[in-house]
Image 1 (cartoon, one colour):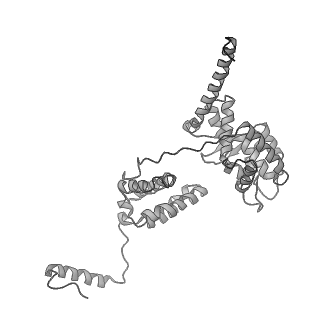
Image 2 (tube, rainbow, N blue to C red):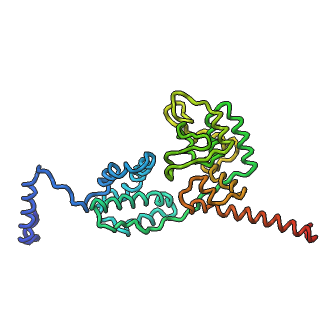
Image 3 (tube, rainbow, N blue to C red):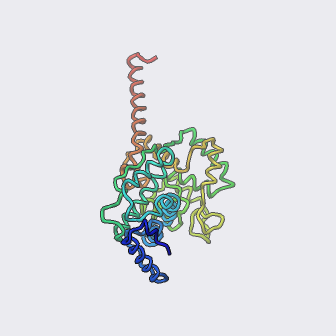
Length: 326
């Protein structure tokens, strides 16, 4: 083994290098000590995190977070030590996605934050050192698409045309229209959760939830045939798995010439109709199962539109009384 040139490497440095090489030779083949906690890489910690912490998440959340870690976090931070990630690393990562993949950052940074928070609990990082804390996310415009009266009528006609070929899927979409429920809540609905005047969901995006059934919604459920081989209200062709409304909705919205309308927009439209009917925001939040008032507040501007329209009608009536209207 050559340690260096004698006319270049000082004797003291050469002896130090020799002792290090001899020690490595003596230890060769012996078990190596585990890495220090702050030197564990993000890639190694990710497996531990999913195994131990991931069990607290719902199955769908587990799948989503694992995908985010695999596609976004580990390619960026996988080789870095858990204990060395700093705020500057997070900021540089955020800025590298500007203008291209801002939504990706908004979805991924909460997952990274939870990982590093758990790392603090395990002693892999200093307490209170989470570099994701306080990092601003990108502001984005939430898509808002509401069905008009004409679009509702067109959708009703298309659903009626499809009812003979796809009775269960049409019934599921109608239940979405009448309740404002999330698509996943209806797709995975079980008969045991169906009560005379409500759906008692044991779990949802915001926890246990009650979906109130109005007369049209109750009529939809009454018209369903309850199979003996499944507990699902809307089983797929494989019986044991829930229905998937995605492909059917694509077909329906194409027939309606409304390619920009998502299934979730039926929920927005439910809120829009409630606002038009002067239902208070707090009541709408209860109907939709919002946990926070701020979530329902996004519909407040629709109330402004309704008030403005009423003001226009009043002013028009006054103008006619004063002889100012044409």
